[in-house]
Length: 319
Ligand SMILES: Cc1cc2nc3c(=O)[nH]c(=O)nc-3n(C[C@H](O)[C@H](O)[C@H](O)COP(=O)(O)O)c2cc1C
Image (spheres, rainbow, N blue to C red):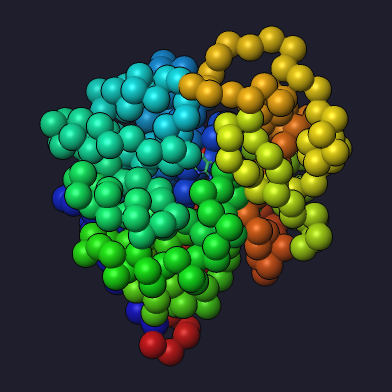
């Protein structure tokens, strides 16, 4: 199947693959820039970054993108949501992706600032609301996704419902690891796909080698759903810290800078994500999509090669 371009507002990606935003510092400017340069859309996971750090990551992405399209992803649940959005717009980001919660006000703000807003939703109801409010496209995330989850329904079930609910570009996300998956998403009505887990194994991904090793070794039974203090479930690979969350014995936060609008204080998710990103896996959470174990080649390689492989696999499948 020949892959079509993906058009979101005035931006046209030659390759209809979006690299999903990954906090905390898993997808930074280097990865986003590399995916954008390869013809896809690269996304910086901005949740948990300071404004100055975000500015410099956007500059890094731009320098590497070779004119390609870059975006940021920010959780609505983050206390600094608006500050991050404003910083990204000041830095002339192309697209803003918002997940983990929903803001009606962001769409008008995006329109006023000539910046397309792309919400990540898991239901036809929220897709319709986003469309009415002025979204530029919709990312539909199924339960197979990594990180915080908005549904327990598979992408193959939700996608056709959302396709019927809107005429906006629809981008499918969750568990996509191969050309075969991409073809299925297009057959179900998607205009593009968002992939995150596959890109953790990119050279440019900012996770510590120990983090990537967990991805390389993970088996089906290692992937679990945990409770997150954000108030949503999260998908992760088992680590000693994750076992503690599962047995409700994770340590309470040692200190708190109130980074979330609402936090259950069950444990400090930011510290746990920072620990794993830096290689302290035993005390960390390694977020991952459900299908990490299905990735055929789990070697570390440049993001451009991953994009090329996915396109090649897709194009080898008859339409
Ligand atoms: C390590 C990791 C971190 C993530 N962080 C975020 C995030 O900060 N914001 C968000 O909206 N989605 C986040 N996600 C979800 C991805 O952007 C993406 O939509 C989803 O994981 C797609 O499924 P896949 O990983 O199976 O390809 C994260 C996913 C992973 C694997």
